[in-house]
Amino acid sequence: MMEKRPFVSLEQIQEMVEKFPTPFHLYDEKGIRENARKLHQAFAWNPGFKEYFAVKATPNPFILRILKEEGCGTDCSSATELMLSESCGFSGKEIMFSSNDTPPEEFAFAHKLGAVINLDDITHIACLEETLGTIPETVSCRFNPGGIYTISNGIMDNPGDAKYGMTEVQLMEAYKILKEKGAKHFGIHAFLVSNTVTNDYYPMLAKTLFELAVRVKKETGIQAEFINLSGGVGIPYRPEQEPNDILAIGEGVRRVYEEVLVPEGMGDVAIYTECGRFMLGPYGCLVTKAIHEKHTYKEYIGVDACAANLMRPAMYGAYHHITVAGKEEEVCDHKYDIVGSLCENNDKFAVDRMLPEIAMGDYLVIHDTGAHGFAMGYNYNGRLRSAELLLKEDGSVALIRRAETAKDYFATFDFCDLLKAY
Ligand SMILES: *Cc1c(COP(=O)(O)O)cnc(C)c1O
Image (cartoon, rainbow, N blue to C red; front, side, top):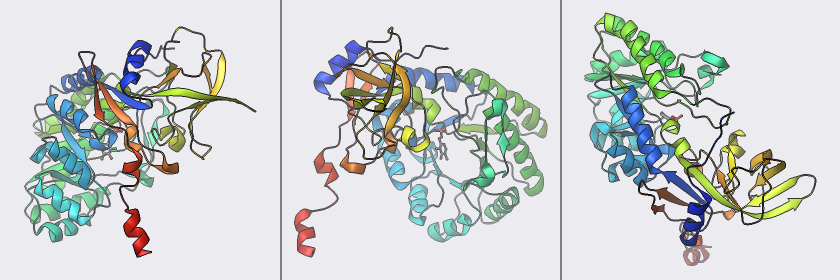
């Protein structure tokens, strides 16, 4: 079993809490940059390669700016994600708009920014044309092969049950219509399996999409200029999981590219990715303090964070590794449920977890919260979202989003006006 160590020490946490009280999400700039460089190295063989970071995973402007410096674009699915991208200096084709069930005015906004629009459905062509008065020159379509998509070590998902994307028949038709209406540059996109911890997913998906691109060319005369492998590359949440080797993944995609696309004269197709979890997941953690212990039918440790700060365990029963800061070397001989304060019994960061004995005031580091962590925050029970901090490369710490206050919680109504109206 691999040791899972936090990127932050007890001493660093003790220093941080003097200025920033727990709970907070902390991000590791060095880890983010090194990982982004590795991804680019893995796909350096493809001249048009671009990673469009999925903003929904970690919608923080400081994080987006780091990724911009590393050569990434953004992948957005809503107006506010587009605004965030624009405010961070992303423009035009550095922005991918991969949304579904899209409000028409968001198509208009994305188009105004010059973003590449990725259509989730054939019916959206009419909506797009009606909204924009035109069809953009560059447009992408999202594919859904249906059925069950199985990759190595039993990992699979059920695209046939997913609301995203078009059937192959619809996709062919969509390209023909788009071309007729004036589109000139085309892309193909698919996202079939989430959080894959195997080096086989991207190469397999690439094969599916490359072969599709060849059929599209034969049937419609359209040659895709980019193929977007989207997200889905996972991270090892559990200590016994082997991390993905992104260099091996890039090499796997290259082999399929040379086998399928190059012989068809399609050796200039750009590869795009929209990784979120892989880019940020391991480089964020939630730091929280033990504030209560309770001994009833089980042993509970109550912490000052709750599911409003990290929803994944409550929502999917997701495993997040926990380290008691400063007790990394101690034996895990105590069995605990680590819980937050929400009046919902699924507000548990861990159930029956073996950990060292926890004392009140201990800091717990909840691992791998860098993606889909803070981002899924909500205000149930009137709980407020925490601060986000950045551990910079030089070891200093910056506040990159302050914690919400009661004022934020009440900002969407005015007591006086409401009482008058009532
Ligand atoms: C969520 C999402 C992503 C990112 O997925 P990860 O699993 O975090 O890599 C990419 N593209 C689209 C369209 C998404 O909805």
